[in-house]
Image (cartoon, rainbow, N blue to C red; front, top):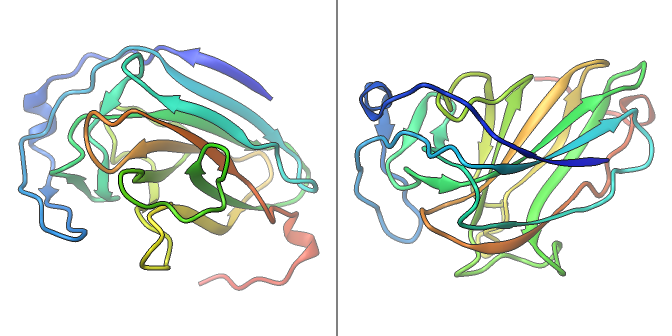
Length: 203
């Protein structure tokens, strides 16, 4: 596993981003929609994982801090958030280096107790991309987003049973619900196994 500080380079403007559809998020209350904000390009941590299937990758521990880049996170893969307009982020770039498809489970939780339910003020957010991620074009290659786990009291995001073809790369953007949040996080891959060892359905 390699952890690198990535500098994302882009030429972009808030005007270009504002042309993209945006919507308000709602959680306990409804937040107002604001203008799209061009990403601030600093250096975010990118953890590289080559995963051939089998034993789950080791946990990834990190921090959202003032040194991270920011972007206007998606609300859905076709709509930008009107609340998370300049959220800090780190990334995990996971490539299936095995000969067979593999499934990936990923959960973004609290450092030290990643399986515990997330409650205020800890409110992370997770986005999955196919192949690559560009903070200046946050809807491009977007596969899915997750704000909260199914349990109403758990604000930790997670994806379960994600199929990754042999040789394919998935980029997981680790971020927060709102702007300006600084917190320590821990990502787990508990239960990740090769597809050949389990039964699954494809919709």
